[in-house]
Image (tube, rainbow, N blue to C red; front, side, top):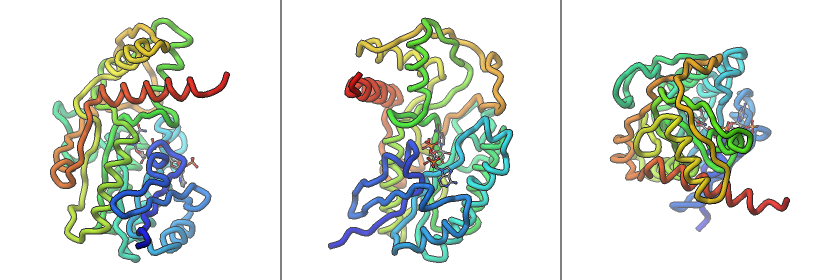
Length: 300
Ligand SMILES: NC(=O)c1ccc[n+]([C@@H]2O[C@H](COP(=O)([O-])OP(=O)(O)OC[C@H]3O[C@@H](n4cnc5c(N)ncnc54)[C@H](OP(=O)(O)O)[C@@H]3O)[C@@H](O)[C@H]2O)c1
């Protein structure tokens, strides 16, 4: 029997890259690059959604330049908000369930507990506001959706905190790292697995849960904790390491403020879809070892 196909946007991204070409639960995941599904172009979205009889759509593409968004809000708003309305309308019209990735940045981080799925949005910057608007537009246009908010995504692919730390440790012996922001690292590959599981369920079960969910690595940490774990694992593998100097975020002036509390309560996704979460230290260890292995395999 021919496998049913699920469309994935953002083929070149950190998360989309882990879904591209995967097959599971009788579904094949077909990831399209920007040239085949440009979220800034309504016609391109409509053509991609109508291209084949898709069983589902996963939107792993987004405008993700958090600081740059402060100086180019139109671009962020177009891809993260306006395009979500176009995508939700196109998928609703074709009766295709839509799975979308959102962010802890829809919250201000002022609460002193992990954020629940239904806590009100209160973004601090343009990126968070555009992603919050994208969520709202999907909810308004398409009832068969699942929005998965995540945080602190990293992996051996793309640009992320783990890769930056290892690069900087080759240049300096001590690094100032923020110790007053709390969240959970998430392995992009684990998030990709969760997205595929949710999309496959929505595509095959009309009674599958819909709505908003959270998915992150298990536990909580500060960026300084994460950096120390990265260097502990790297050092054990013979890789670069640095001493972490724990500082407040006030030491880093950035165009977009970051939430102090990015912790997301993930119980709803675990109980609705049986998704498993790995402790964040295990995720970080896995990522560092993958980065070291890929560096070793590149001929010098
Ligand atoms: N990274 C994090 O720490 C983090 C945290 C919370 C939530 N998230 C969310 O997780 C999702 C995936 O993030 P990621 O880390 O995988 O991002 P990423 O590595 O920056 O990838 C972004 C992807 O979006 C694509 N894209 C950007 N503009 C586009 C457009 N106009 N049309 C089509 N594609 C476009 C990019 O394509 P090009 O290669 O052509 O630019 C790329 O494939 C996003 O929704 C993000 O908001 C990420």
